[in-house]
Length: 365
Image 1 (cartoon, helix red, strand yellow):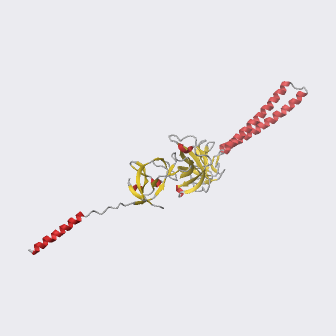
Image 2 (image 1 turned 90 degrees about the vertical axis):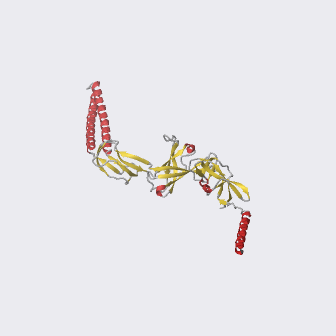
Image 3 (image 1 turned 90 degrees about the horizontal axis):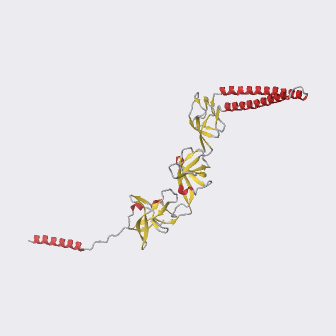
């Protein structure tokens, strides 16, 4: 009996304790306030740095060919060879052209001999005419023969010069200090005039060609400085200057070609390497605002930032806001068309982990 009472008494005590614990007010939930890095939206400067992608090319990139046809007897270069200005690249069989030149030389000698005879005959006829031993028509005929012989000498001289040129054209030489980029023929191959024999890349330093959108082409000027970085060379940077600014957009595009000459330590750069050109472009953002790349998030709804609104006591509320940006690279930030105003604070780190309405504090660097 006493044992039963003890059990019931214990049960009552336990139930009372449980009921008492259920009636106690729950502990307050403490909101986790996260510190965030931030930046103030500032107006863009009058000049910003733009990055344009392009490709390197030789200052002179051309196919070399003979001006006359014939059989290739020698070709002294292979791809990758460096050749000096005037160095022999290939040679045609000169036999036929040498024969033609010798015939032209002989023709000139005959014409000169005929001229001497015609001039001597004219001088004799003139003396006879002065002594009234020949008629006026005889004098005129001898004068005409002398003039004709003189014209034949001039024509023979031109033929000889042409034959010499034809013979010289049987040699193909480098127009400048170049590198052989391609070779199209082999010895003993017949080629026609104008048929490509080798391709050369010439010039001490290569050029870089980039496409500049129409919005900025008007701000690009010849002689403007720029910096070129080449990916294949470990993003090495080279000084450059704008040498040509295109006046017509590329077919099917709204961009204009701009050529820059690299002007320092360019010996390792080859034609066809990918390059990025950084240059100053005035009037960069139509809204005059640039924000850091890291401040912009993107999802299925588009681009957005978190604007930090003051909530008192050193706290801020992160508000998600859609922004419209320009799809063009800039080393200083992303040009913003719409969505933020100068003077507002935006989160610059952990944007993808923030939620709209979250309370934060500012993390000072």
